[in-house]
Length: 137
Image (cartoon, rainbow, N blue to C red; front, side, top):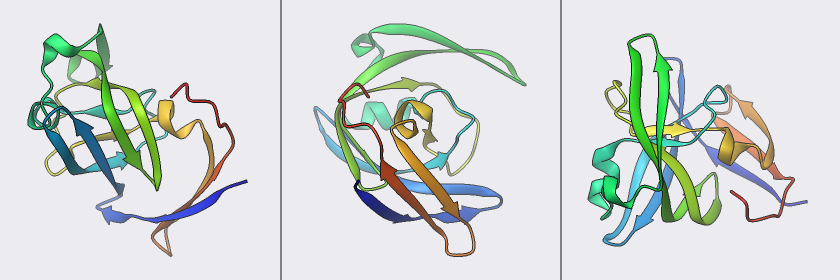
């Protein structure tokens, strides 16, 4: 089994990881919260627009319920998504406005479910082990 180690930074009590997202206009590196409570990986609209996507490129509308009420967004496939040292082509993610300064999105379970992972706060790293080689991410 493939094992990888990736660094993270702590911002307040959030675990922040780097991700690279590729679209029709290039790539961008962004900070995502490692969020096992998030069903789906989520990016903000400004990130998506920077790499050349718009809501017209979305394939399905979605809603999320938060303490602030119901937020509307959409699902989108990006050309490539790289996080924790793993590259995934044609990756499906949600696009929503997130009301959190300094965070560009959430790394959710639709990505993380393909790994056994261990968060090591004292070492500021995440260990992952690939458990599913299927490309259904």
